[in-house]
Length: 324
Ligand code: HPA
Ligand code: ZN
Image (tube, rainbow, N blue to C red; front, top):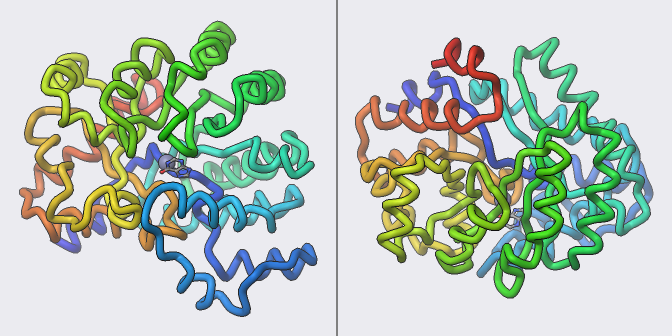
């Protein structure tokens, strides 16, 4: 099964580019940009990655992003991730970035987008990996800040396909961002949002009904509402599930407890993704392998995750046909 998983073409739909910052690159950028970080070695950074919930991760994750200053830093970050995609046979990836994590520190929106986009273009040309870019609003900040971010994104519509919503779900429900998502839809952006990761199933329902989301990031708490599960099957709403992330952030205590295979067998359009691979200990192949090790599956079932991801992606219909 290992060689089947390694060779399987993969499509990633839930990846925070800031979460692909490996400790070695963090160290190199800290030195290059003369930024102080509270660690002495990459191993010490890795040792600090012990999380007990989403917030304990976010605190260290936003701190890590402080080393990203120049366009070249965002390019280097994205290029390193694309090389990992190549190694894992990821043929298409849809990448989140968090503009406010950078603009709040005085880094211009344009610098961030240009660095990421340049690497994505090079990935398309030299690695044959296609991609899309999605800007996420930080849900712990207010809606005015999200509106300001949306307006900065307008001059980059050629590079940004959609908007998303991430950061602390508890206490920051989707309805807080109803108006800015409506505006984003009016501007022609597709919408997605994290929901039902740590928050209740109502967040999934409201993400669909109030934010116009075409897919739900995580969504694993849907199982607590049978009617919602039925709806997700009926409407074939994609869930971008991140198994190793859920394990690291204690959403599930053990991979054997994870519900992704149960959801697949119920007929939901579930996909496997890496979320923040540098922090959660694995890229795409590692996530597929971890699920398969804990839940014996047929090759057809494993391949279904890729077929689901192709259908759930933002690539055009002809390209979907070609990949299927
Ligand atoms: N959830 C919420 N916010 C995030 C995540 C996540 O899994 N990763 C990066 N920001
Ligand atoms: Zn995420």
